[in-house]
Length: 303
Length: 318
Ligand SMILES: Nc1ncnc2c1ncn2[C@@H]1O[C@H](COP(=O)(O)OP(=O)(O)OP(=O)(O)O)[C@@H](O)[C@H]1O
Ligand SMILES: [Mg+2]
Image (cartoon, rainbow over all chains, first blue to last red):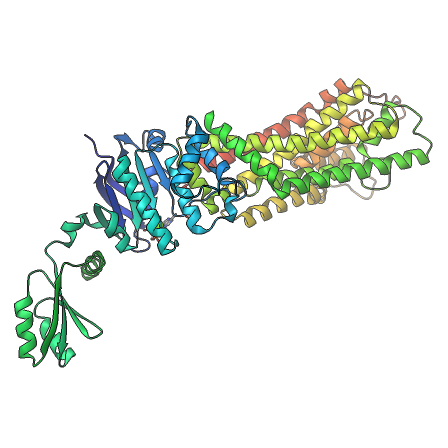
């Protein structure tokens, strides 16, 4: 069975600037795939190439086996896109906007479909209101309904929760994961918000400067790394300096955080004692995605 | 095409709900009605209303009888502005708002977007110009107390079609500029600047160039041949402007006495007293000019199409 989305050597060059550099990845059916990266990393450019809005300089992408270069219409029949800024016609109502999308996709019984989807994203009662009167969060939700009208097998969300309040973002993530889990729709979403990605994504790719620099399931990205948080009585700075023998060390208020590739609890305790400190508390855990992301990007800068 | 029908419907819904559309409709209607009443008044003052002549009906329609600017003059200004108003931000506004990304992420070809937009513009222009002209003819019938004959009615009909076409030329040019410039303010300014230049500065420019290319001596007085050559050059240069073409077309179509669009030496004693042309003769005389407007419209539409097809549609236009 072919992957739902397959990017093969995608590359986009503007003059001498490489916006996306030889990017390849697969997204399996029913999976939620997170595309992470700082501003300007090339996420939106990659997404735009996947849907055929921007022609790649080289490389190609496939959705359900259809090449976006050769069969862009077939690809767009299957992909629902929620762009970074889902531009609705502000002087038209939500219904009119969705009706246009329905017509562009030859959706049978569009009225029913629209009513159903608008309820699903929690906007019933707003159907006949001009979109210009919607808040940012409401527009994003309407954007989800809009992307779903065609009954897509793949959904692509470009920073879906940007600018949405925490409660609204929570609800959106809820909708997105239910789409993947219950309806087996493949989801690719880009984001900067690591805790959100961490919560719903099955697999993650980290992009920087047009390249994917790390990719895999969350456990693999966080695997082989350990974090030790220490509460210590004593001269924090001296102790922290000594702990650098074990790995990367940073101070967070009164706590010392050590990040290493192995279990270093014993060694750490010893070093603290030798440095004249008294260990008060110790917490040993896996790193969060935010910590992984930071260290991946820092490693990248180092090279 | 399925896509272009959907785009067409959406464009019409947007246009008819827009303030621009209402404003332009009101302006054209008011200028037409104003010119009709002023003309009727001055014709009455000359005791001419009861004189049921088809020629007078055309005078009444074009609003040329009063000292106010005529309806045809108002149209020559407002038709291009209508076209520009409908086209100048057609593409770039949708890029800026992000709706173009949403539109094009659906399974349609890009052609259908531009085809739908062009068709919608033509329809709106036809509704405005055709609708207002119909209202004005109705008012003229009430004012004059008699209706137009077939010849006159056809003249007004052809004139209406030509005005729609003229407006469409500016619409397609503005639409092309809206694919070239990212900001709607820029495309609006460039469209208006071109319009002002081609409408108001083309004659001084043509006269100036003609004076260089075929100078008229002051002494001895220029010969008729020299004067004709000079006029011919002036006209040829001026006719690169659609405004000039439209001006000539409206005079041929609405004035049966206009027999030629070439430079004519009028003061010749052998010249017969001019007879009026039939509407078919006037139309035949207009055909080259009409073709020129059609060509201009097609050229700008094709340019807009090509520019749009090659465009990168970014999810955000920085
Ligand atoms: N038309 C263009 N010409 C030149 N450079 C461009 C063009 N479009 C995009 N870029 C550059 O490509 C890079 C990648 O942009 P992209 O929008 O894909 O980043 P992103 O990861 O989506 O960032 P963000 O998180 O801010 O949305 C940026 O540095 C951008 O300036
Ligand atoms: Mg982006």
